Every structure is written in C-alpha cells, then in structure tokens.
Length: 114
Image 1: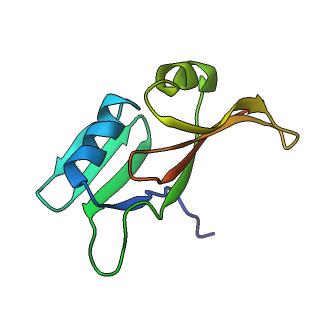
Image 2: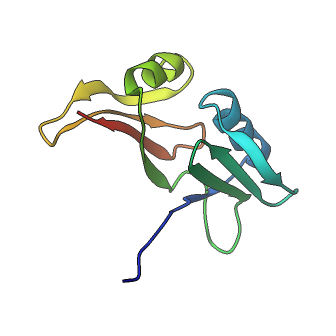
C-alpha cells in the first residue's frame, strides 16, 4: 500500500539569513544544505526548508507543527528567545504543547503526546 514517509515544511523568508540563524541558534537545527537562495535545515528526523520570498510566497504566512520528545525542555530553551503565543500546557486532545512565532511571524506549534 502506498504511504507518506516524511514531510518537510518550506518557509518563504523576508530575511533569509536571519531565519536560518534563528532555527539553528534557537531550535538547534543544523544546516544540511545551503545556497544563497535555499537552505535545508535538519534536526533529528525533521527537515525545514527556507528560501527568500519569491513566486508570490511571502514570509510570515507559514506554519508548522512539530511533534517532539522533551517538549518541556524545548519550551524552557526557547521561551525567552522566541515570541510565545500560547505557553506550554496540557490539552484535552492528548497533547502537551505550546505555540510560538519565529522572527518572521510564522506560527510554530511544538507538541508531545501525553
């Protein structure tokens, strides 16, 4: 049976270099591949693709939801370095999560199943 194996969100950026630096410095991603117009960032089994605004794609209009282990530790590491929209809490739908915005305004949910 056919199956999906991975998804990699792709974010347009007004400040390409700044957004790459944010995800590396604040969330611990590493640059897997980078040119002047495209970057692939990776952490564990997750990828995030970043590129400068083009083709009608605008920075700050993207979102992604990452499922992790150690959500509390990640929250503590980022809460003073990112814009927290919803602080970490237990949800009725079985997750412990928080919502933040990166410097471009993209919404990033980070969750752990309880």
